[in-house]
Length: 93
Image 1 (tube, rainbow, N blue to C red):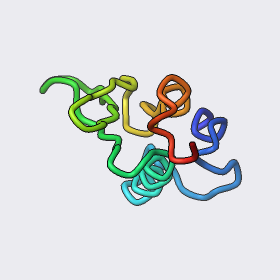
Image 2 (cartoon, rainbow, N blue to C red):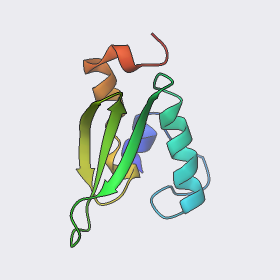
Image 3 (cartoon, rainbow, N blue to C red):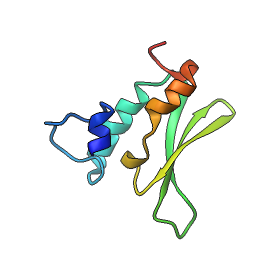
């Protein structure tokens, strides 16, 4: 949560917890999606069948960029750093 607040994806005084609530995780996903160009999207998948980790990726056409691995989707958000490296994917170019 501290990283989400630091990166501006979640308010310090905002109610809810995207690491624990599906509805709050969807709110977070919508905020992440708003930061990237239409047609580019972020997906989160389990890493392997026995793993507890999730992998977040950015999909842009035929290219898939790895963002990060973490215990859950909110913790795997590394979008600000990705957009610095790939400004063509940013919605606010």
